[in-house]
Image 1 (cartoon, rainbow, N blue to C red):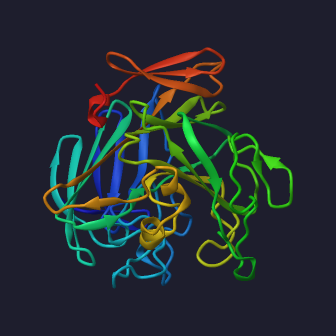
Image 2 (tube, rainbow, N blue to C red):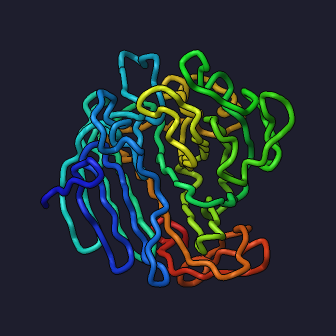
Length: 367
């Protein structure tokens, strides 16, 4: 299948009647993604503003867009048993190979060499949603992993999530002012209410309203409740009349990392212009601290929450996620709950308004 250059990156196109998506050859990044709802198009995922600029940066930074699979997830600053992984792993930096296109489903394959394995990617469009499946075959040993979805806020958005067990700001420095990076949240602070997260200067801030804290970059992690049939995250764009949602199996992807990126990086290529972007990153890892940070004993493990998986060559790891959009009527303010129906899901708003969407929940193993 021929590649098209889209926003600076050779990419494959996959589409259904109401979804059009592009997947980059470098990093297997999914974006841009366009949804047709009510006769209009919405594009919820972010594309880095330097996408078509020249520069000597890691491939994952140069191509940065949409959503991509990380193996391992995060920045592996210290080698683990001699393994030196690039930021977010080979899967986010190397070149994927085309395997097959069948209607609205695209199949790609990637061969990792630092830790030998094959990774199979399927992207399927439909139901105003995108279904992603990654299968890691032949890999042995402990590994952290995750999805790195990034949502662009062109208007104010209201965040909500399925039940969580624990919430914390990154313990340690996320950005360094001496290098031109700034953070606003209190390092390492644990908190019970997403609407009252501690600030470094004192007081609290509401993490459920965004964009906010302009000029800062912050990282928060919370653990999903494994007792739920599926875990979800949602952003309601009331001014634009739609909601973005993503779903996962919380027993496979145990946590969510939120990356609030709002102009707090002044070094290249960021240069203060990566703004109003929220990473909603579904992971089995310890923050973004890479392979060693996720494998070595950490506070999240002590709470019984997995931050890595021991892989066996004969037992492939399968990771599935779904994200999509739904048009919302007047009065739909913030998602309070997403529940299963016989044909898909219902999104219930705090105001009592509800929206029903067809969706293949069996894809996630929900029956």
